[in-house]
Length: 270
Length: 262
Ligand SMILES: [Fe+2]
Ligand SMILES: [Fe+2]
Image (cartoon, rainbow over all chains, first blue to last red):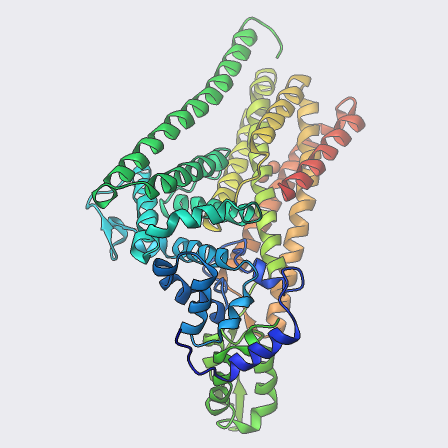
């Protein structure tokens, strides 16, 4: 293991770790909470990046080690030394290797808008020349996000990440991040509806994404053609169910009012 | 906070701050120094740090320093306030459009002369609803999870009061608009408080905030106009007036309370 000469701040880091052992309970709360995106998104009031620079450096260095070492504490320690800190500073992350997974999820969610851009906006990797419908955009965005795992080089290890996300104490932050991804995808697709369908849209997209992610870990086809097909089919399924629910609600409302009008025409005072 | 004070960057950035600003206008040093130390997170506020103080010459020829306006930031509480306020407003306007939709047929049938008034009030409510729909989409705020419940409740309320007759329907509008008017008033007061505070600090108020205050003010005025119309159309003659209005007002407060939370 090659360790770089520790710099001044690593010493400070080291000393503070020795004087105050990092337990999950006693550690500054900020580590557990800074991934939360602020409410009230606005271009007039930019928000802070979700990770402070130190953590960002260590975690992104750790990600480059995942291909060889998996999502492990070892990758985290190597990430710390790669970034020029003492190995012990990996202790800054009470959630250990799961923190690498979460960092990747957050970073790729925030980069998705740059990764997948649509023709009318111009620039970046454009998908098709004609205007895409919302459904096609959703599909491109889901595939774009899944392919990001390949591009970052963690796809081969993604089964480990899924196992980590399924550890009971990791489930809430994982689900929260999945919900944020679903919201991001709907937002990037240009969907602006803020009615009763808001929740079902996000919930069904999240379920499709989670299923596709699991499917993709088993996919041996060229360029993940099978995953692409899987995503397309699942999205069609939820669309059918979604429009069935929507139509039923509409039908009940329509039939209700039709009945009321019928009674009114018969002289009932309702 | 433990981390930021220990990072590699903050240590190397401090000298940079000194050579960049302080020696140039050293007669301003005390005031600049306090400004800098007030900036809580050095990592993220590069644009703020890089702003230079500008020196302007005044009429009498003396040099006076005026600092350019710093863009103000929103605290987490402020963001949360805006988020829940806009969500409640959208839910309220959804309810308003549905109340009028359900009231209009029976009322207009019995009192054809009320058609233009009902349409006028409905159109304004539809405008308010679309204003808040746009704001929710723009600021990525989720609608209330009670959306379908409010849809049902508002339709039921509009229908019931519509069948009860003109006075009851107007009493319903009077009760709803009294609550909603107060609700919007509170929001305007809070937002104006922020603007005043921001200006006092010498920071720049984004256009977006001023616009929001104006939008809410305009909507509030229209709600109060509905209140006047309702009273003019004998809302006070409704029987049982006290019971009806207190139940509706209680319902509004409950709905606001719930929508602020879920
Ligand atoms: Fe309104
Ligand atoms: Fe109104």
